[in-house]
Image (tube, rainbow, N blue to C red; front, side, top):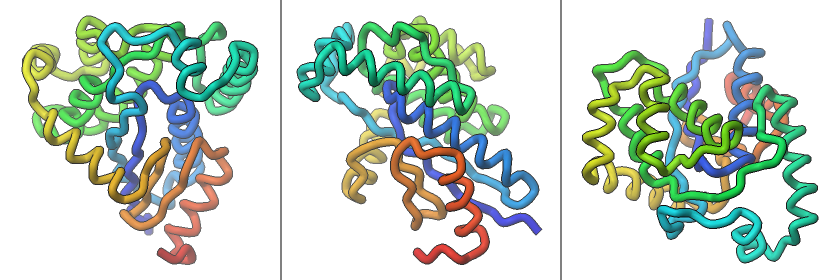
Length: 223
């Protein structure tokens, strides 16, 4: 008998540790194939909700926000690249040059989660493609051109996506979801919530996800 698990993956498209965490979670789920069935949803979190459309130079942004030096940023970028490689995610060796606003990407991700006229699993495909577009290919995840191309690539309705981007559909829903998780104490991502009760924080190794999911599925992990 397989055990059903509901997983809410709270994250941002511009978060490198979210890409690492997702890769590790997916590998853990591969190890649990046949033991669990998963209902996976990607929930919105903006690391920089006030970021203007044109974005900001990454070195400048990290220096202002965290007080880090270009040298320490280079070291951190290499560590992230290696962690990504370990879970099958490719980060561009030179890193991303700018950080961008991701609100419209979250609107499309929400749409992909609630739309009933498309095949199941497309929200996950869209999330993965957006992370790749930004961190692997260095593209702007706030650009309508990029967003529409990615939507088409994963098989979602490009015309419908274009309509959404032209207006403010799902804006209220995304903001409500963001407030919900912030009010619940989520202030850093990734935050992986299983069955609405168990929290795994950060881009953990595959083994951590696998062990936690096995305990939860077996009922040995208390809420």
